[in-house]
Length: 495
Image (cartoon, rainbow, N blue to C red):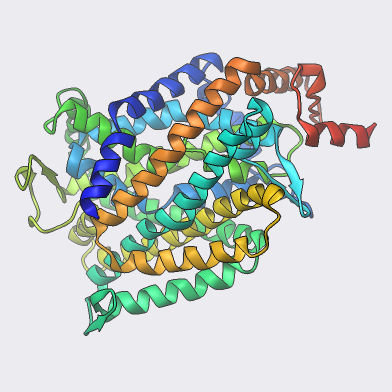
C-alpha cells in the first residue's frame, strides 16, 4: 500500500503542480495589485463585521470554520516534515506560498460567494458550484465534488487523527498492548480513537451550526495558547534568532537537501496547511452572510496569514531554535541528525521535543493537547466540506442516505487513521490535497479568462469603499457577471 501511495504522489505532486500553485498565486497577486498587502487593514476590520442569520453564518464564524480546516496537524507535524525532508529552507518556501496564496484564497472564496446557492435553508457553495455555474461544465464540477468527498471524507481525516494518536503515545506512553483486527495496538491509541469518534459523532450529527459554534470558540483559543508557548520558547533562546533566520534564508537557495526538496516540501506542506488554491476554504466562505462577496474573500485571504505566517512559523522557530530536528538524505542516511534516527519527521515528535527541552514536563502533553484540538476541528471542517459536496450531488441524484453514509465513512476513517502508520496516513492525505488542488486551480484560472468575476467584484468593492458607503451592495448584472442567481434574487427582493 505504501508503494502504491508513493507512486501516485510522485505523479500528482510533480514539479508541475508545485509551480502551478506558485505561478497562480503570483498571477492573481499581480492582477489584484497585491490585495493581500494593500487591504490588510480592511481584512482585519472585516473579521468581526457581519452577523449570522437563519441561513448563513457570520464572517468570523466562516473564518473559524475555514481556519479549523487550515490550522491542524499540518501546522505541527506538517512543518516538521517540511524541515525533516526539505531542510530549514523549506520554511521560506512555506512563507512564499502563503504570501502568494493569499491572493488565490481571495479569488476562490469570492467566487464561492458570487455563485453560492440556498439549499434546504442553508447557504452552500464552493468549487463544484462555481465550476458548474461560471464555467458551464457540470461534468468537471462532478469530478471535483466526488474527488473532494473522497479526499475530505476518507483520506484526510486519517492524517489528523493519526497525529493525535502519535502525540498521545509520546506524551503519556502506550499502555498495555492489545491484539486487534488492525494488528497489535497500544491501549492508548484505542482509547484515543474511541474518544475522538464519540465526540465527532455528537457534533457532526448536530449540523453545520454546531460545527461553527464549536470552532469559533476552540480555534482562536488554542491558536493563541500555542503561539504564547512558542513565544516563550523563542524568547528563552532569543540569542539564536539571527542564526535561525540566516539558516532559513541560506538554505532556501542553497538547500542542503537539494533545491527540489526544499521548494517541493515547502510548497506541499504550505498548501496542505494554509489550503490556498486547494479548494477547501471556499466552502466555508460561501456559508457566510455578507453584504458583498469581496468581503469574505478578503477575510479568507487573511486566514492564510494566520495559519502559515503565525502558527506554522511558531512551530518552525521552536524546532529550529532548539535544534530538535533531523534532515533526511537519500535512503536511510541523514544530512543533519540531532535526534534519534527512529523519530519520525511526519509526526509531532519534533515539536514535542522542542518544547520539552525548554519547558520540561510541559512540552509533550501541551503539544498533544494542542494537536488534539487543532486536528479535531480540522476533521470537523473536512466533514462540512464533504457534506457540502454531497449536497451538490444530491441536487441531481435525489438519493437518500448519502449524508449518513458520509458521516459513518468519516468516523471509520478517523478511527482507522489513529492506528495506521504516519507515512501511509500522510501519503494518502497528500493524494487528496493534490487532486483537489489540480482541479480547483485549473478551474479558477479558466473562470478568470472567461469572465474575471472575482476581479470585477474587488474593483466594485473598492469603488464603494472609496465612496464611503455605509452599506455595501452587489449587483452582478451591472458588472456583467452572469448566473449569480443568489445575488440577483436578493436584489429583486430589495427593490
